[in-house]
Image (cartoon, rainbow, N blue to C red):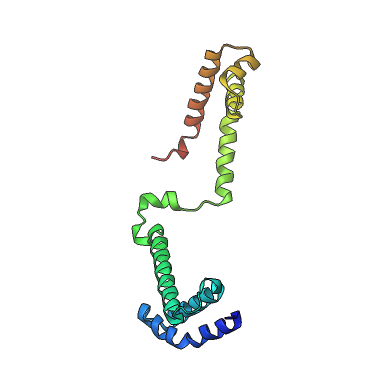
Length: 169
């Protein structure tokens, strides 16, 4: 059987496919979409059809599986989407989108907090923040590793205190 013969036979089944699709969905447009998906899959997977097989049964199986897969996809998608009645006031802060203006203010506050650190705390903290290890900072600044750890710890505490307005309870 050629591809054109197969395509013609599939299209001839479209009326019975529409009736069968109405068993799955009560909406006329959804039924038409299901028929189109079924025909598209049948034509696409023409090579999987074995001559002598019941074409109508093969198409019905494709339709049933397509409907089930679409249904599962919709259910899975809806399980990830939070409905508006499910959003509590405490979740609004987390789920609210931020704009670039807000993040600009945050970055300005961080830079200001960093600039308020004395040099003895700023240098070890910024080196640590850039990815240097304690022992590398110790060697670079020629100070004991314990002093490096203390200065980084103190810098963190000063930064936390300076940025306490951003603390989420």
